[in-house]
Amino acid sequence: MSRTERLSLGVVLEHRRVPRGWQTDEWRVVGLLPSGVDDALEPWTVMAEGEGWRRLYVGRVELELFPGETASYRDNLSSSRPAVYVVLRRDAERGVALREATVDPGEIEAHAEAGDDLIEAVPLPEPVAAWMQDFIDRHHVERPFLKRQRDRADPDMLGRRPAVLRQEGRHG
Image 1 (cartoon, rainbow, N blue to C red):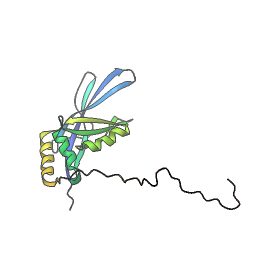
Image 2 (cartoon, rainbow, N blue to C red; image 1 turned 45 degrees about the horizontal axis):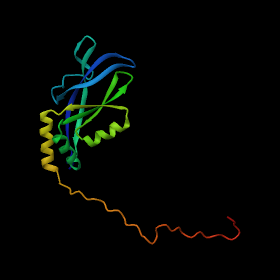
Image 3 (cartoon, rainbow, N blue to C red; image 1 turned 120 degrees about the vertical axis):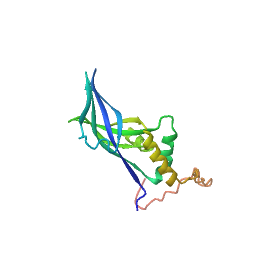
Image 4 (cartoon, helix red, strand yellow; image 1 turned 60 degrees about the horizontal axis):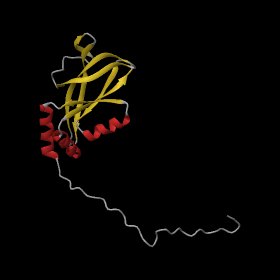
């Protein structure tokens, strides 16, 4: 029996045309929809539009919680800005593609280091926060911090080099 849990969310993006040098488009996540609200929507449905902008329902992502990561989830909840991190990737066909979402700040650091992904920190909806807290309450195990001990150097070996053996017939 798996102890992981999943929660599905719909993602709404806003696309704006911005005539700034090399950048012509700006994408940002403007909303997350609870599962069920987006059932009648097809991905890339235009929800609203105006002069130079449009809001699109781009699809669904699945948040997944793992028992071994509860400390990270707790850190997210206790931060000054709890967030769902939505990962987008530039795409030639539509401009961006929806990749995934997570509530684990440590996991999102790996995406940030890659440099190719667009990462949006979206304010954590209250129902998602409650779901996370319930998961933490059921699965968190406090682990003591253990400082690693370095191996001690052998003072008799410091500064010594192993003897080099000469083979007969070789000159060096």
